[in-house]
Length: 112
Length: 135
Image (cartoon, rainbow over all chains, first blue to last red; front, side, top):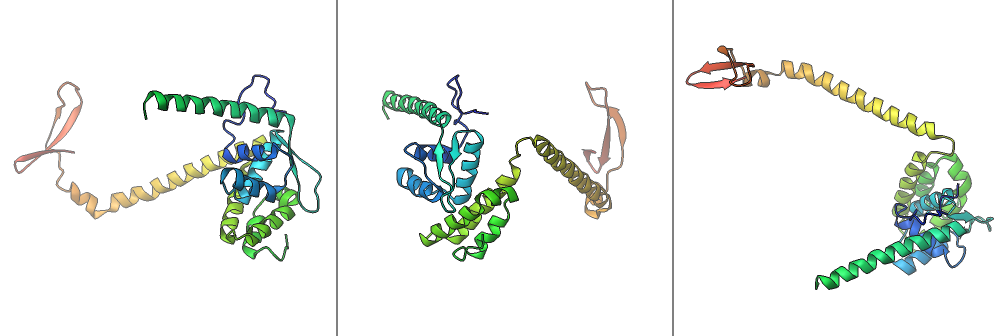
């Protein structure tokens, strides 16, 4: 499958939804389980992910091979970002940066 | 999923997920709900979140099960067609029998037929008490 490792540099996360992007950002500094992800995303982005949204996004990201589940510790499954996941996140953040820069430039040019 | 810290409400929502999802995430999801409730999250919002997640989980096709999606789409289309046909069938006799409807054009009687200028199509005109109506 490996759809996240797109050699064309295409932004596979463009339509993935905010939750998926936030989860990848949260996993970028190390594996986390569900509760830790919710807490971290709340801290870093001020977004409270519902548990149903979290598991939906985790399943989607896992199907895309962007994350992988590690062996359960007790009942909790930690998740880890994969190499294609990190590449996809980098491409997406670059795209966001370009859009953000263009937006700021236009605001300046428009004198707003 | 029989976690004592998890309200029955959340357990009901978790039971709405497909069995394969419950086997994989069920115990962890129940524990997560218990932790969030302990942190002050409303059980209702957890219930609704899991319920929405369950409906999404049912709609996602399993690998190698693309046909089930097509079957679902066909089923929905067939149901919509059936519903529309049923509504039309029930509305048609009601319209025909409705006294209000017949009363609206109760005085509609063909006067004379003449061609609509430019189109060559016949047009029925009703002449009554100084004003013309077209039916």
